Length: 321
Ligand SMILES: NC(=O)c1ccc[n+]([C@@H]2O[C@H](COP(=O)([O-])OP(=O)(O)OC[C@H]3O[C@@H](n4cnc5c(N)ncnc54)[C@H](OP(=O)(O)O)[C@@H]3O)[C@@H](O)[C@H]2O)c1
Image (tube, rainbow, N blue to C red; front, side, top):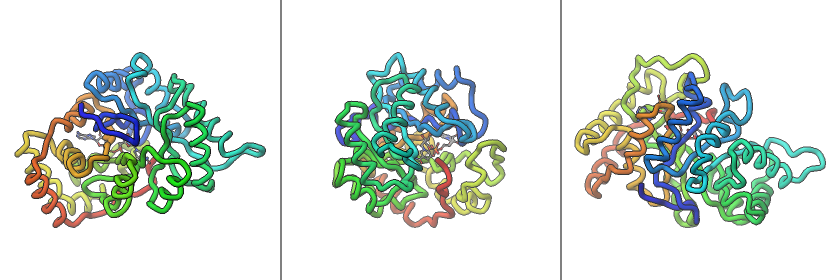
């Protein structure tokens, strides 16, 4: 698979979002299945894997997902790039921000069975100043414990404040054909400053696969799709012209709608590295194979102008992690 860069960290142009093996999209598969799915992705050429300390069933624990990712990738660790994320809601009494971040990192490394994390993100900006976090991340890079660092779901003001302290490797924000705010300032800023942009929910939580209809029933337990506004019946109906457009291009390119939506963003920006998520072995490979779908410049332009004429109904909402 073709490679891209998150600053100086080489990754495959499509990564794998591992969250759904632990949280967010209903019943989780058993561990053996998840491990095999991750290893299949690796065997298929994917080397970039995304997780977070909070990805656990119902967000009720810590580390479920990191343990799976760590176990799955242990035999190939040196050929892989692992990104994980921490929450920093408070700094313990008598500890510095660096001590606190390092404590989270060491726990994550144990679960990931590694002595180094490649990309370490702050999952959400909380009460700790981003400059302090940037400083701590800079020290962890100097310590040799992380290769690069990132921020998630932030705007350019925060990115710049952080970047001025310790240059960022990646920004992970929501981005898809129906969630394009990042195009205005964040992606251009990242391009200019050699920061990788890693879209989360690039298939709009499944909407852009064309498999979701107004009658689709989501799972009852731990399924974010129940509250994603874009997936209300009315909004699914409203967004149908976008799905029809994807289906038209899918037919033209002998691909699937999900693949077209990924190929669109890969064509559009050289620093974008999407991390589609799936808990299904076949769909994981389908998404990675979007790397083989090439849009000619005229095809991209036509798709882009048709998309620009479609009204987007609803947002994904930001309660998801
Ligand atoms: N930084 C953050 O705050 C944040 C927030 C959310 C997610 N993330 C990261 O981003 C990754 C991806 O985001 P996401 O999982 O929310 O959204 P996504 O990749 O846009 O969509 C996932 C959903 O789409 C379905 N799907 C995926 N590929 C499909 C295909 N080819 N055909 C049909 N359905 C398909 C999946 O169902 P099946 O499982 O049934 O295939 C799942 O329900 C996560 O795994 C996580 O690592 C980060």
